[in-house]
Length: 341
Image (cartoon, rainbow, N blue to C red; front, side, top):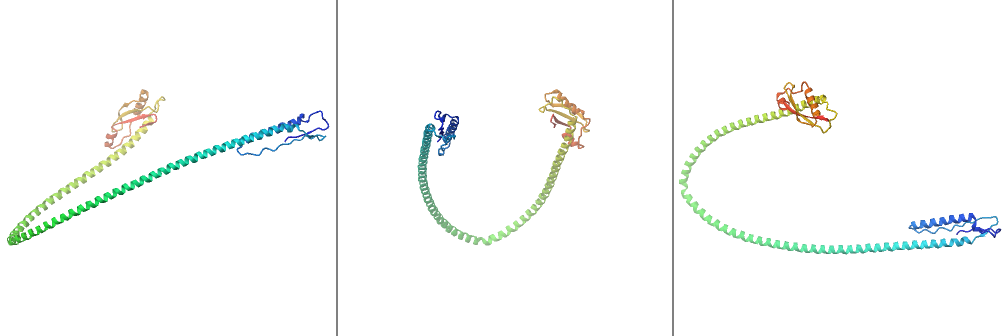
């Protein structure tokens, strides 16, 4: 509440027209408006700001003015309206949240019903599958039992047939033994003669086999020696090839280094330019021939590579004639501004 006192000694002039009173009133009004605006942005309701009373002290101790009370009453109505509007909005928001909560509860209830229905169907399907498997297992067991019974009857029949055949064979065997017993003496003499002849035949065959085995052993030994010789020659050739390759790489590196030192590409050369030369050498390392086999497309660039190849008086070459003939009689080398390869 804003109040002030009226000057008792001067009844002709209204106290609220004083500049000091007007200034206090305006500042109070600004503070009330600021607090009311802040309550709109704060979701938690704050108690209304306390009324500010201002009093103008004069020498004559005037009474409080009632004019300002009339001006302050509309501010209170406006605050109540704002508070009521804020309460209404909070109630609307609470109602909206309640409806949203009810909607979510309904959605969860429907989802739970669907899940229960799905579980019920799954359980029914599981029971149907169990019943089907049980029926299938029962049919399988029945079929296995019938198959076992058929196999048992078949085995029983087979056993009866085998027993009858055994008895018939036994009778036949006894008759055959009797016949053999009667011919035993004659056959014994014949067997003795046959065994003697067989012994002599086997002796001859043994001697023949021994001579053949000796020949085969000698032949196998010769073949093993030949195979060992071929293996040694192959290993030597492989080692020589590796040595030749290693030696060729060493001399190729020396040649690339000397060519890089002798080559001066033109200033217009780019890293995309590549020229490949075929160089022919003599066993002494002297240059026999040089020609362009793949041009860079730039004649000046190609000519600098040819000049570098011809500038070497003698190329480093290996003493091994086989290495020279295979890798250095004629070989190709590429020139690029970044390297010689």
